[in-house]
Image: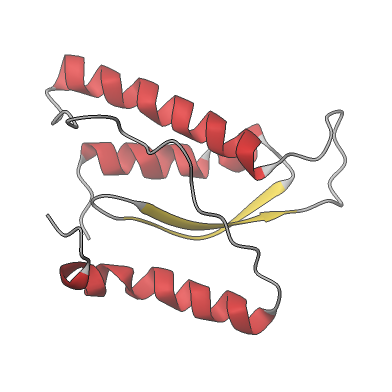
Length: 123
């Protein structure tokens, strides 16, 4: 996958997540043409003034920041506009319970670009 400007922007905001929320550790991530995969670990050992974040908290921040910059890119840099919205309303989350599952999911993320042509939503 070779991301366009919007894909690069999404990657950049993803990398800013743990700057915004110090309790998270970022692992494998890939931006696909119509979705994103990523592994986020919440480190409950990190002490901050705020309570432990929820997945919903940082997903809301991530979607807000990327949507705002995307809209700027469409208006000011001629990025291709999406017909509806940039992000779906919800997201899929899965708790990784052991190292074996972590490695399986990491491998899935890494090989996802190779399987893009098999995606039923392939554009």
